[in-house]
Image (cartoon, rainbow, N blue to C red; front, side):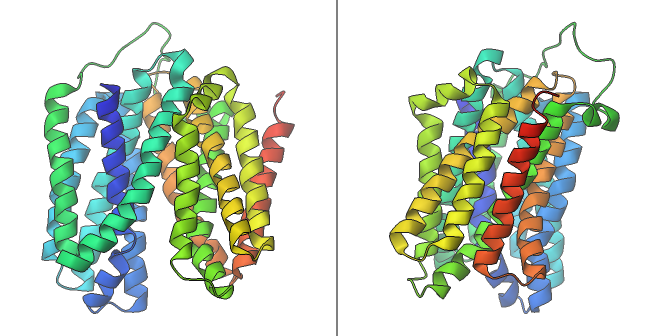
Length: 375
């Protein structure tokens, strides 16, 4: 049954990545101003954050099964509504509903998976799920761009909707509806005070935010770096693919046993350090081969960090509090992407300055975790 949950994770992120290259052109096609086009892109992340939190709360109260099936079906239905978007404002409504429904899926899926994974295999399990996320990041944008150019954005979204609807129907009949219970569960759900006193959760949330902050910077600044060096524009896509393939190989090869044998806080620090250093290297190089080397290093750091923050969250929670923790966790994911691109854009940084800024933040996060290790 784990493989079915991995498929849900894949198609949920596939839905996210497939829309990245097509929403802003679609908004412009609907006569949106630059502001409204940008808002249409960001509206999904905004409502997705609320969806993540709601998913976490109700996964703890009702169990992840009901929220997972509801999220899949609602997301599929809202994907069909893109054909009703006739102007920028109706597109904003569709984007809000799509992001809100899609936000229900991922925390519930990861909660369901974590509650059914043995403790001594949670690192490897997180690595495998990370591989499916990486595959979605590689395949999704290519599918979205090609499909939209041939048949249009509403049709592209509808195809993804059919996939999610099929998964929702199969989930209803195949997944176990019962949530395991144990004697060591806390008296109540996860509270803000519990988070504040829980170093494992704080590390996991910090990791989620800065991981996606750097992704936001990379997505925004890498094409600018490639243009500045007068390299072919398609190289930015190739560079991102190299990073994704590197991470996937580490997630799937036998080296993934490392994540169950080494404490996740150590791989967390290593991941922050390698990612931060790779961004410094990316800012300093100008030759194409060295750009690829930088992205390979970034992929290694990403592969170290993603399973680590998942393992930290699992270790720091019980089945009764894990849903809400995953809700906050993926809310930090959504906020991090927006913050990364918005922060560097607001400061009007060059590509190299953006990479250095993000690298400093990642290395600072590594230093903070190292300094608080004993505590």
